[in-house]
Length: 396
Image (cartoon, rainbow, N blue to C red):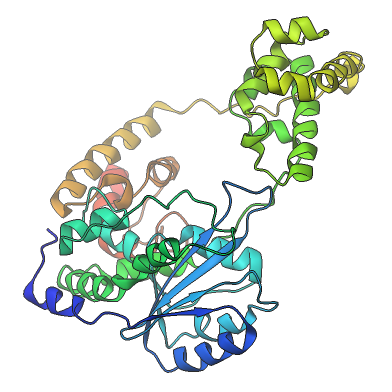
């Protein structure tokens, strides 16, 4: 469906000029004065979640039709001037895979984005099976992006020139990509679908880090007994303290699988800890005695104070709801095939299940209910209603 047209090739000839590196307030404010005059601006960012305890934005890449900026936020004391553009509803901000960027900019600077267009999300609505930027640019423009710096530490300074050039390329082609996608979405009458999804995307926020109990974020903890959960929670607190002291990500201190194994084995001596092979020799040498003490302390917690995993028992689904849900899924598969879209992009299982559970008798009854987006109500609801309405009110 996505083909490279001559017009698209011409658009690629409009490339940003030399990189401008911004690392102080004066440069940031001068850049913002210029950006406020531009109708289309491409954005991306790099962070350091793979290398530090508390992740942060380390680099912001910005491109217009004729200029490209690399903003280093680490030495800049106040990044709030960015909001002049990012919150301006008259300027289109183009991202590719904006979810992480939206969360990060709000988390670090309190910046809220308006008038965002996500080319990754748009690519999904165009039916592309692979929507990573490198795959999209390869298919559409026959361009290949180098990804060897993708997992590097972006907090290091000074940044090598090769990493700066690499980062800049992620925004070089977003404006022509946006223009091509926008035109094709218009032709398919799907532009409003994507714009609504993009508006919703601007509201995503990161969850608070390290909420208690910590074991709720450890896969497999729901299978542990209460005593084992107590050991695990104590070990997770210990790892959290270590990670903060070392300024390292949790997984680079001790992995979840290791802590689960220790929680189940509950070793009470160094030899027992060594025998379960949950830790490397270096980890045993560094943390072994402390972890044995943690296990022993947790084993002495009174039974009535042991943590309990908050299981939620799902009610039995009535057979008529199951029948409607299966009918809706079958319809969705065919509808998505007709539209050349992924079924989950068209409408997800959670929404279908909620609709199946509702006792809808009239065509308008979903208008004030939350399951469907506006575009889904307009495009899909009449067909859904025909499947789920009671036979006696099917035409009501």
